[in-house]
Length: 182
Ligand SMILES: CC(C)(COP(=O)(O)OP(=O)(O)OC[C@H]1O[C@@H](n2cnc3c(N)ncnc32)[C@H](O)[C@@H]1OP(=O)(O)O)[C@@H](O)C(=O)NCCC(=O)NCCS
Image 1 (tube, rainbow, N blue to C red):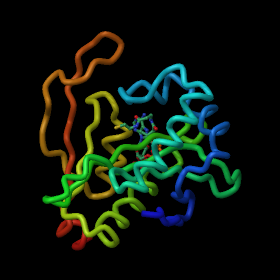
Image 2 (cartoon, rainbow, N blue to C red):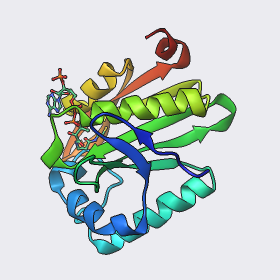
Image 3 (cartoon, rainbow, N blue to C red):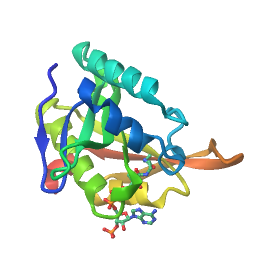
């Protein structure tokens, strides 16, 4: 599908363009951002940015996953990413993952980005359930989910490794009926 623009008050979600490669690379190439993202390469060079943009565009075309860039309303450049993957088609569920450039942390942008993708998931894609995983030490990420109505559902014991230390991973879920009641 052609991804829509999801407009918020402090951030908008839109599809990645080839011209986003420079800002994507600049913001993603940060150990603080990559720390809790096992699939994000570090260091993150121009080639990684180009490959990611191609992958995101192809995934959307094939309806395998939907990855949006977070566009800053004043800078008009990509300052993060958020996506839906692991579509379990029969069950209409998907996993949400996201990141934001460190310069913009603590302003509510990730909370708004999750709100926008949650609305898109339930209203447009008619999903039944969303889930997300966080590392136990990633307090900010768990809070972003809680503020959007996700509930902590379980613990995968010592399932992630950060700086050589095994950490628990928390799973969080939000059902359509819970979203609708909010
Ligand atoms: C986690 C992350 C997405 C949070 O983004 P953000 O835009 O700063 O989050 P918000 O501003 O929407 O904050 C939501 C809440 O979490 C709190 N919070 C954010 N970061 C926090 C931190 N490091 N420690 C404690 N609380 C934190 C905020 O204070 C806010 O709570 P409040 O409304 O009660 O004040 C961002 O730090 C990030 O991209 N980190 C690196 C990648 C990552 O971890 N992605 C998630 C993988 S599961």
